[in-house]
Length: 96
Length: 174
Image 1 (cartoon, rainbow over the protein chains, first blue to last red):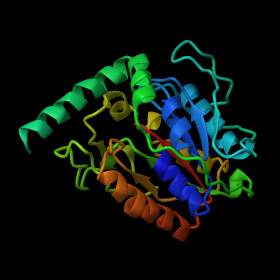
Image 2 (image 1 turned 30 degrees about the vertical axis):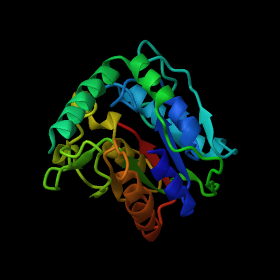
Image 3 (image 1 turned 120 degrees about the horizontal axis):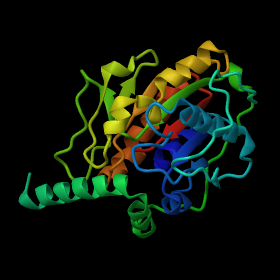
C-alpha cells in the first residue's frame, strides 16, 4: 500500500496512510502514516464502533497537515479495545 | 494452477487468518518481510482547508462492486489490478475478494476498512469539500506483479485522481 501512496504523492497529491506494520512502513516509507497496532482487516477499528472509526479518520485527516517531515509515522498509541475516543461523533469537528 | 501454487495459496490463507487473530504474529512477519526499501520520500504540502478539499479513499483490502470481476485468487503471487468505486456507492453493493485476511468484520461494517458512508457524512456536514471517485486493490502482491503495480496500475490511479482534481487521499490496508 505504501507503494501506491508514494505513486499518488509523486503525482502531486498529498496522502495519509493507515498502517498496521511499522517495520514495513519504515522500509517502504509512505509520505505520511498513522500506525495502529490493530488486527488485519480493521484499519479504522471495530464494526459498529463509530467513535473509534471517526477518531481514527479525524486523526488521519489532521495528520495531512500536522506531518511536516516526509516519511513521518505517527503513533496515537490507542489499544485495540477499552479506549475512550475524544472525538464528537456528531461530526462537529474543528479541522484545519 | 500447479500443485505448488495451490499449496502456497492455501498456506497464505491459513497464515492470513492467523495474523488477523494474532496481530503480534503479523508484526513478526512484518519484521522479516523483505519490502522494497526507499531513502527518498515524495512529499507535497496540503495547502487548502479540508472543507474545500476533494478527498478520495484508496484501499488494498480487495473491495469491489458485486458486478465487477473479483480479484484473482488463483495466482498466489497476487493481482495488481485496480477497481474503480464511484463515490456514491452503497456499502451493500460492495464485496471483498481477498483470501489472505479475515474480512468478516469488514463485511458487517465496511466503515472499518473503506468508509465511503462516513466520508459522505463528512461531506454533508461540510467538514470536507466532497468525496471523489475511490479505488481498490488487493494488497497481497509479489513479483512479478509488483512491477505491474509500480509501473502501471498505481500510476494509473494517480492519473485518474489528478484528472478528477482530488486534493488528498486516505489509504487503508487490509
